[in-house]
Structure formats: structure tokens, C-alpha cells
Image (cartoon, rainbow, N blue to C red; front, top):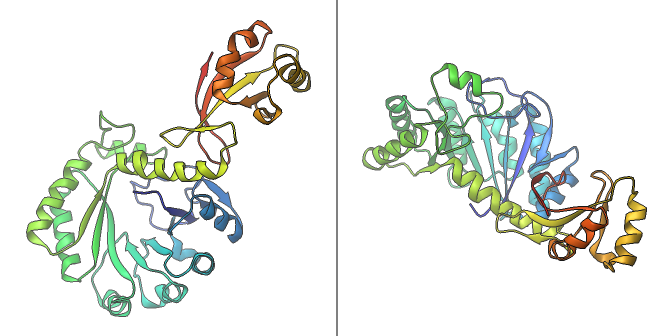
Length: 336
């Protein structure tokens, strides 16, 4: 919730094809690596992103991380070496069976927690549980599927009998690639959300209530609003502190707020710079050119104060809010 964990998307490869998989087209089925929102190809890039958010841990996901076990171990070892043993690492897997042979290298690399996306009791799991007891937390993480409360109750009874450490229940969400599959199964969008499936939260709360009375499990529920509105926002705030320019203000949502100045028609950025610094006496340290967007960026307060005069000279001005990520995706632009 504090946004202190780096999300390491180690690969988009997966053999399961779950109908509710929320991955985007840029990641689904593709062998790519992302550290938070940054696509990386080298361990050093992922470590840099971890430093950008002052990370205290890493969550390794996919796709299926165990399909790229060597790569996963390489990154995990690097994080532990860089940040120390107290840097908490958890990993998601849906691979069956989750055997000691498959997980052993991860344990040697320093894994602290294993989150199973599928559960099947048996000899392999018993061996794994015995191997990880006292050193690695082992749990189940699944989405709350409306209409399947009774099936989920039976699953939790099996998990309880296997003495797993925890169960995480996620709110089911619509994504760009799973929307058709969810709709064909009768799922609809919750009217109070931009992505949550109606009835998923109600199912999760009912399961939590039942689990407190019928199991000894440690059960958690993660609503979509918490993930997007709290966890992600806090992570953005942490990154913004490292990447904000001197003239950029950090909003309560962790967005970068700045003034935008577009040159007048037919005016080059070089010509605009001369006018802004000489005629309007704008400090050079308060001006940053952005050739990609053909504009100058500056303090929003300064641009607001000069807006009337700038517009008289043909400049187009406004205030922008951007994500504090490499792409600097512009969330909102308000003309002045």
C-alpha cells in the first residue's frame, strides 16, 4: 500500500491462457521485461528504477516467471546484492506442478515469498512446504469470481488443510485483452469503477467473512481502487521526488505539474527562447525545451502570471499534469 515495492515483470510468456488475464497487448505473450512502467533489457536498468522509488522490495510477476527461471534468478540475486537481505522479494507463479526442482533455485537466490496462482494438493506441494517452512512464506493469490463463491470456499478448505501461510484475493478487473472473454461469461463493469467487475468485491467480502469462521487462514482482499488509487499513487509520489525538475510541482496524486509554452505560429523554439528570456525576463533555469512536443516547460505559477502577456505575443500557454515516468505521459492539459 505504501508503494515501496518495485514490480518486476520478468516475461509475458505463459502457457495457461487464463480468461481473466488483465495484461496489455504490449506485454501479453511477449518476452519483455518491465521494471514498474520502464521497459528494461539489463539488470542495471531495473536496479536504477528501484532506486528511483526508494524500493524496499520487489514483486516478480509475468506471464510466468518460472518459464524464465535463469533470468528470474539473475535479477533476484542482483536485487539482494544491491539492497541487502532485508529487501523483500515475492514471486507469482501459475505453473503446475510447483516442484522443489523448479523453485529450489529461487530459494537459493533469496526468495522470501511464493504466491501460487493455482493450487493442487499433493506430494510436490508437501515437499515444497516442508522445504520452505520457516524461511519462505507460501500462499495462494486468486481473483474473486462472481458466481463461484462455493467453489472458492472449497478451495480455501484445501488450502487450509495444506497449512499455507496466507490467501490473497484480488478484485476481478477488465483489461484491454480480456474484456471480450469476461463479457461472454456474463461479467459486466461495476458502475462505480472504470475497470472493476461488478460483484467481484461482494464475492470477496463474503469469502472473507466465511473464512474467518471456517478456516484458520490469513486472508486478504485487494480492491482495484486500492491498487490504483493508493499503491500506484504512492509509488508515483516516491518516483516524482527523484525525477521532478526544479520548476515542477508534485501533486497529491504524485503527478508532475508544470507550465507549458508553445511558440507562436511560424516561430522556432530558438526564436521563442530569445523572446522568453529577453523580453519576458524568464530565468533560463525556469525554462526547459521539449522538442518532441514543440514547447517550453516552466513553473506553472510563472506561466499563469505571464499568461496574458504571452498570449498577446502569440504564444499558446497552459498547465499540464504528467506521470513521473520515462514517457512523461500527459494526463491533463488545461489551456490558459
